[in-house]
Length: 269
Ligand code: HXC
Image (cartoon, rainbow, N blue to C red; front, side, top):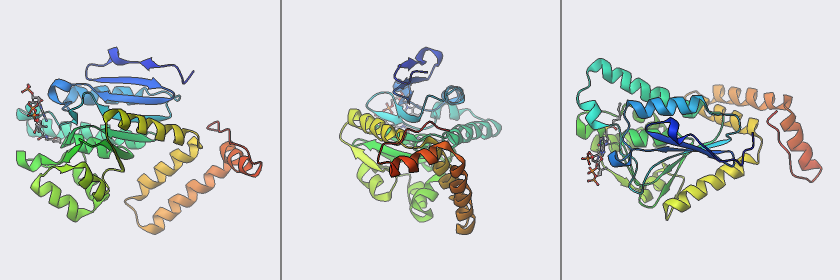
């Protein structure tokens, strides 16, 4: 498939838009009148979209429609009438969806514009890394609602910034601005406008797309899988993934291109 063709699956979904351009998928949560709050339909649309993602998509950006919010959290109105068993299913649907980002063998960037609160922050943390605009606001305010983060926040934030800092943010439910988020290591880079943010995310993915896609997939998998294991097990995972790449055409192409003083022409094989 021609990766320069812009595909637009917007009409297929109720709550998201999905477009592909230059091999980059742009997934936009599209409920701006509710600050892109996450209800069941948003998750169903994302799961459907990610399950159908085609091989020509080599990088993914997730963002929110409008200037004001990335995602202002799980839909509080929808949660207000949930029973315990419905809450189990809702949280599990969020877990399943966020794990799909981790399982994609391509880089995923959360481009956070405006509010990323509660489930919105949790969704952003499921990406490989976060870029943000200067107006971004992060927080896990669930304890203010008598809740805890339920879309992976207790797990991912503690892994990202350490248990102490994660507890301070969860216990207080306080919001942090982009500078604090950068200092804490939550945000990799900040940008002065939403346009710059999206352009930078695209440029980063295009840069990564020049490299061996099997190597990117393998490095993502090893880093993700070894975040929970001891160093000996982690090194073993690295050793296996590293050596497996020696059986690929791309690895031969990459090292031979260096020796021939030319650009590598990777094929993903
Ligand atoms: C449902 C929401 C919403 C949310 C905003 N809206 N956030 N609806 N769920 N999380 C709706 C408002 O009700 C309103 O709809 C419209 O979006 C605009 O929002 P306003 O509040 O009028 O805007 P503003 O005054 O500018 O305030 C922005 C805000 C505030 C500070 C972001 O909306 C806010 O505090 N939202 C809730 C943030 C939050 O607590 N998130 C965590 C949720 S718990 P109407 O119809 O009135 O115009 C969570 C749990 C995850 O995420 C785990 C679950 C398993």
